[in-house]
Image (cartoon, rainbow, N blue to C red; front, side, top):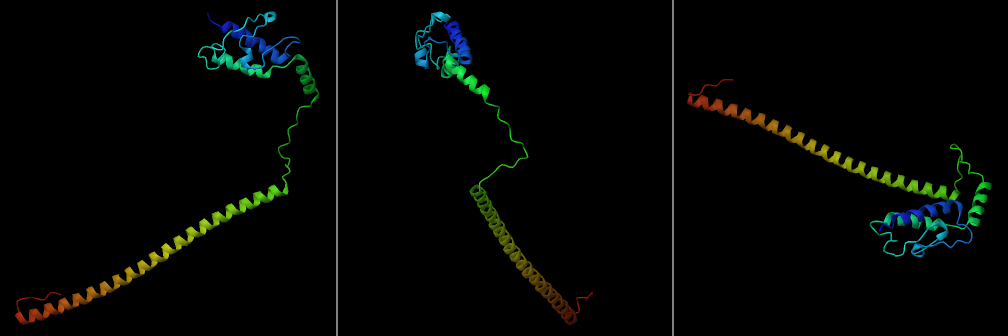
Length: 185
């Protein structure tokens, strides 16, 4: 036999009582454990008799038991609910601060924020300077390598020109001695 109708009656009753308060003279559960087997014939509640059903881990009834548990935590006697509603009626609604109004921040907080921001900027500056120095060192190294390569290229060109002259001169000498070779310039 399904216990769901009984759970739904309890939930509906507790929902009403959360809004209006528990009537005077009515014993009501203050915990989930106390709600197991709780009966209130005056309101037509015959009770759910075992913890097997009244359990938040129950696959069939777990969800509604959780809802009832949340409602139990909010239950208060009628007198308390009336006091709260009177207090709430007398309390004006909080006025939101205008968006452009400055909010006071204590000096210590402002100092701390400024020091934190200064430390962040200093760390960022150090990282940037370090990166700049590394880039500069790499650039100097590349310039030095380029200068060495240019000097080597000039030296090799001069050496090539000298070897070509020597080769041409030797070819002429050889042609003059043997007479077989013809010099073409």
